[in-house]
Image (cartoon, rainbow, N blue to C red; front, top):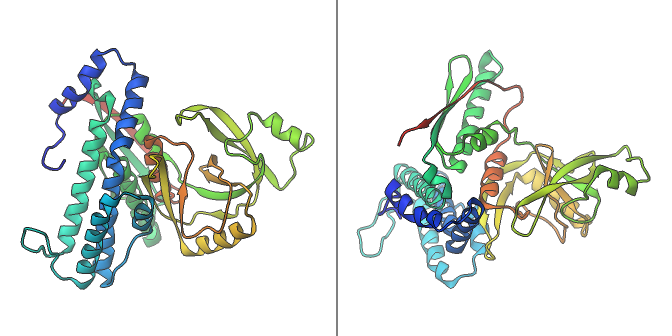
Length: 379
């Protein structure tokens, strides 16, 4: 893919015959998902990126370090063809940790440097963006927008300057995971200015960037199933018409077998969270069965507390709550570790969005003071 960039002409040739065949937008969207999942291109790119991210950490620490995401991606792949990639990654990490040249079959060895690592990661991100564009049936609309946001952080003092830097870093991570062209930079007055270009879906992008990103785990008291019950009244009826003081009702999206949202459900969950925050990293991925999922790395303290609690509560459902909405409520079947896989019948777009939002909660006290969408821009 790197040798054949995705051009507007290529995208037109890919999608125009399908539109001319009379496929509906829904059919085209399903085809896009099927192509992405069939080829598992996103998963392969995610693996390559994690390999080089691990190389970056290994180079800095002078010892082999593997990200939990890399371990999870290897564990989820059962294809023999991937073993060569696993061995190549092992060689890469050892070369980075020992700061020695990386042997390349049929070529001279390559010197591992921070510049090479950063350039490779940037190249993978560009290829990912190209693949997303190729698999986007909306491309022929050819409408691209410029998005501008100004975010104000509490003014004054070095601590508030740090808040601005943290905000910018977390927004840059969200922009990267959404695979749009853009930047987030600190400006005078501890403000953060976001500039995005050629955005096909500005509503989606701004929604993800604005999300707080709060993360909590709460035990489900009722019902004992993923998806929740249909109404608040049904929940109250289960508890005799009055909800116990230690519980609260949270909404959840209900989905069909294709991952499409069909309505809202709700859960009665413990008011006191088992854990709040504690997400070190979140990345999208695909299981060997072709299911889009979010790989979540928990901070060690949260993982330890969760592991102990899960072991004592096997058989119960645990609600994963993002910004006050239950996104999944899996049944616990054993001790959980530092790395968990979030399933919920999601589409690939949704795991991208969840990964971006969970990649770091925005600091408290910030607010958007200006937001503009300009366009559509001409190609």
